[in-house]
Length: 413
Length: 142
Image (spheres, rainbow over the protein chains, first blue to last red):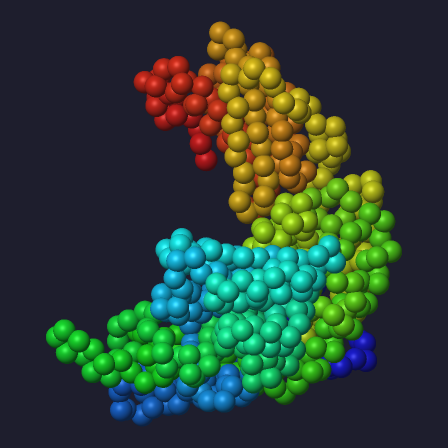
């Protein structure tokens, strides 16, 4: 085992699934940008809720309801601390990051976007940060502008400046880290320049918060979204951070129970922040599970998580460069990218490559990675992608490199 | 196992596809894609007296989708168009020698058959809308 930023040997023992065999070989899980595995502490937290204090939150006064409410709200505090928001009122639980973006595009969009206004996104975006804005533009007759990406996978800052010069630009919505190329965008510079023109910024942090220290007060963004399941937590929990000044003006997205203070026959007084934005019974068990996930990451330290990923990414890219027929996409310096490597090997289609690697027990992603705009930019229909997390090892990367060489030989490259 | 999946016949058809290209004056051209993988297939048909007199395909995608398209064109050339409706999923899998393909990859293997059947139905629908419905119902879709 490598001597690196993290004690990976010990970490691996906390993840029961890593004992699994795929095709009689130990699982090598390199699809972490899609979703990460869950440590026992997260699975136990969910089980503990259902076994010992399952109840609905916020309303009842019996003891179990109090315990459940406490556990649920404690997770909100943990989220606030994790991204250093000023108050828990700024943290809203959604189903996933996609729903969080939809909340903004509906609630904020309806009040702030008018005909001929412009919303700015980038060519790096995941479909979740493209389609909601297309829908909003169609409804309001606003239009969508793209910040361009250069051949090295970095944002063209000149094209960004150009969008800022347009006086109709009303919102910048941008990924902090690309889920395909791993590109880390200069988010502070982007926010600063937008704010100089009074334009708010939404940061899609689905690939940054799980992998590196993130501080919303330093970033100074107006909205941030991310997903629990990409950071050791369960599926079904997304997080929306909104600056309180903006949140206070925002209309609810989904309405019904729990988001109200008083309901009369023909009118309703909405609940306080952030409950106004959480209608209906939320995903209590999984929010509680997410609390355990953040505890786990806090024990490791997010700076160490980041260092570990840089180490693996650098090691993998150095070895991959030497494979005949290999094309790597995006930034080539591991320090400038997340732990994500997208590539193609000769004329082997990514789905064929993923099938071959699966026979070695290795799980990678293949396809368009929900980023068809970016694929068009590179004139490709698909890429293969390996993405790392805290439990991955240098030995696993070696297996991956061997498997790539097997595929290369099989296809005669 | 991949060494079994990517046998010589698949790699041969992938590298040297049969009947690949465009077909000027085609009677029917039809396109479909597999949104999961991004595999794309176009099939062009020349039909005379209900016989497939010429067939060409264009496409891009994985070895399984492209090789199975290549093999399918060989299988149906100079055969009655009407007989396309009887080609079943199992025939394709047997043809390419992959009876145990997993659910994620089976769509790759069957894309060209889907396109060919859509083309056949469209051909009849353009000429005799009444019979097209019957053929569509009889077609073994999956």
